[in-house]
Length: 166
Image (cartoon, rainbow, N blue to C red; front, side, top):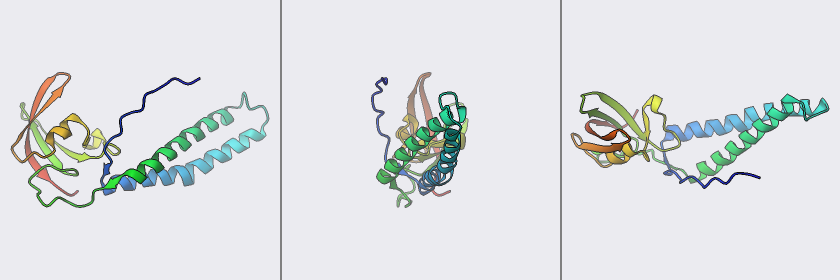
């Protein structure tokens, strides 16, 4: 019996060309390289007899389920994604794919790129367009104030730079 989990809300369906390339590469890696290796390991482990105490078999089957689940997800997700490759005509506003430099009240600066939910990575300063900060920044111009509600209270940022491209 499985535990019911309500479906997660779908993220936005936009992605940068680099993000799409990374997802396609992950799909290729899983399907063409990793899955055949794990399948071979499980096949060899199955030859050894008692499968109930065979670690290679048990963990191999578990890894195959994980790979198949991720492959299904990536295949469906890649079909519904919209790749945004064009830079907007009006580059003085914050749109999807922009690198935005913000400054907080303590004069600390940080630059984020607004990307789709499938490619966000805060360690690389890629911010999901579905995040509160990105939602507040979209459509704003240079020197505009952005106010974001956080668990620590409201924070205000000022947009001090907008650029497009890598």
